[in-house]
Amino acid sequence: MRIVSGCAASKSGSCPAPGAEGRWSEHPGFPTKVADTIGAGDSFTAAMTLGLLAGWPLDEIHLRASEVAAYVCSQPGATPVLPERLRAPFLSLFARQN
Image 1 (cartoon, rainbow, N blue to C red):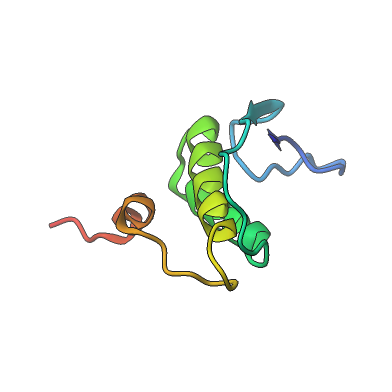
Image 2 (cartoon, helix red, strand yellow):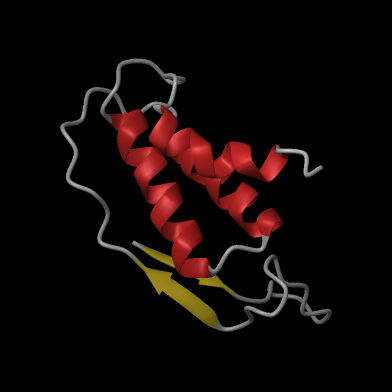
């Protein structure tokens, strides 16, 4: 799978990932015994969006989004509870620093 972080097709050149114009990330995906694909795309997009908002490197975003989507595919139903190892990087984005 390839993620391309580039400018939208407009004269303004707005980009979803500031500073990442023209960069891409490729990841082969994770082997998964598929139980249900419902929710895989949504979970990938959610993970990617959080990574972009957090300013993570594009390869890290792609890796984490692929991990989440693979897990969702391995579970029945569209919204399985993610295991701690997959939730932790995203929860840390919301942790308050004292």
